[in-house]
Length: 332
Image (cartoon, rainbow, N blue to C red; front, side, top):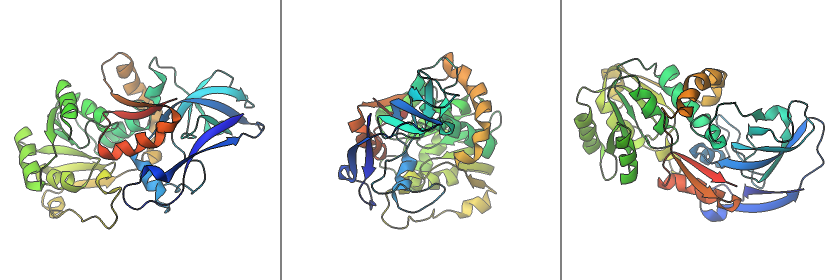
């Protein structure tokens, strides 16, 4: 059986171009003892993958030029030499960016039994959802009544973060850009503020108008002007959970630091970055708490879907244009 998969042919500088990605086809080896073969049905593309294209090891190994790219995927087992996994099982794994995956069974996880569409385990009940829950509850230690600010608030992580925060009873403000994203936030009872065409002072003023008493928690996905404005609007003792800095992912040189970092001292703020892989042991607790709320419709989630393996690079690049509402997915 053959597998089609994507590679990169260079280390990109700045925003990657479509020509960076190459589609290949290869014959799969015979299944070895303990291996499984999976027909992927859904692929995830995520902003962190840009960092893996840098050629530099960070908290995760970089992609290797000419080797198959990796990412979260769900699919169906079509052949197995692992006693834990049977043909027909629906599973999640990290051998995405391809149509047929073959890998050791200990790198494959059967999907949980919650009654949700299978692709939800790549989004609201997958790594993005777990990231939102962990940042608020473990890193920022969100409490009942906290006022919470979330950047990239209509994305895969932010869209769950604002809903989890709203359930705590405080004022929740989401920063987004496109009118339809702002409308999505407002439709869910979230105060929405646009960052577009606003400098730090203008965004600060807009955030203060949305929440005059200031914020207790800032969930950081973006950096740049969003971080500077947040620093200006946090209450004394505020907590910042740093999940991502998408504003600098395609930067060709060092990004300037916040010009108002002194606010960390003045307001006695706590700012802590985190990588979700370090907290994955908490996934069962997250699933127990959030899964039923997703299944019964209490928590809403949005998806932006591209169709066909060939569209995977386009879906990935669209993340940096703000083209997605909710989780960006590729349906095979």
